[in-house]
Image (tube, rainbow, N blue to C red; front, top):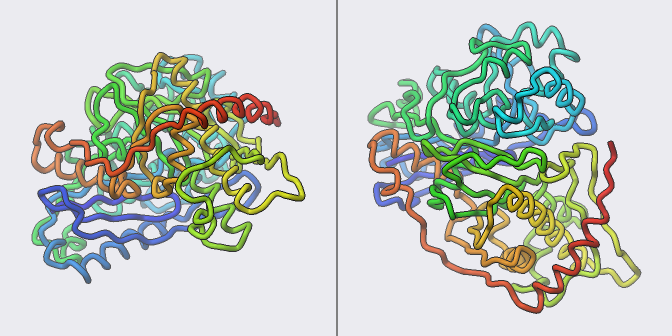
Length: 481
């Protein structure tokens, strides 16, 4: 048996997977985000621990025998968060999250201090990444910065609590701007540019490698017969790739979680930092992932549900399973700023084209289409790096909506495939990494592609209709720098 724990932004999801790679059970617990000031986004790390322990307690209550047999644990996590610990390994402040936009000035300072940043990391400095956040802390909270002895990404903090070991995997570390992406190791020059050293960083491992073992007292709490191995794990999108078998060039997938992304594994680095394409090490050794990322995807639908005061399912039901035509309303999904291709933390969302005849369904459809148009921007940024997307698999909570996937197929003009259980792809991928860390099996033998349950083909008439709408949608963007 193997556990996959996905420390997301809105929830912790844990899955229990057997030797035949069947999900035996799952549990989740919600998380909340604090925004103490406009553009700020933080979480209390204690929430992560409480939620994770609650999922495991729930699995013990419902599947004690299976949980007792767990041999390996894989961790997946929201990327880029800055968790600052003191000498006693206690958090000094709430974690600054991936969708926090406060460090725009620090990004410019960092690139000036370290001109080799883009060539070394494969990325441009953007506020969501971890390193600029540390420069912000040094300027605005100097006492916190001085007291910081260890900087961890969210899932590495969870691993520290579970095992007592400070270890990070190279895929998650790629999103810090402290990693030399080609060497898959910390960059001393990057750390020096933010006033840090390797002493402030966790030990690095590959995602499928053993990293630690679960503490004995926690193994006893959950009735486990041994102390399971904890794998290196992965950032949420690389873990999602492992979960759907996207481990080689030529595959691509779209993630519709709280944030969104269009991602393609590559055998070499194919960076395009000028268009805000992300370069991450894959959780698979010798592989990388190139990604276009948007800051708001399924969270846009959640926003609409709050706005109308109804459940998301109630918003989607009147739309049916396929669009008949584009909505007359346009929506910019920049509720928390944007990454690819704009790198603009200050831009905000917009509804355009409202009239007396606009109804709720037109607005909801526009929200889904706006996310799809933003992913078309990601597609074009990847194409400029030489990566052509011919088809894509869908993961994340948004992949449950056939209407949304149909919109995506028409906007991107490629087939979009859906899997059973695609919304738990990252947790399932983490469980696969936990298995690899225990067994040492061939990666390709474990990271197979699950069975697709539905394919959404582009509709010739809608392809043209959406292609005609895209330029006008792009004209709505106005930088707020």
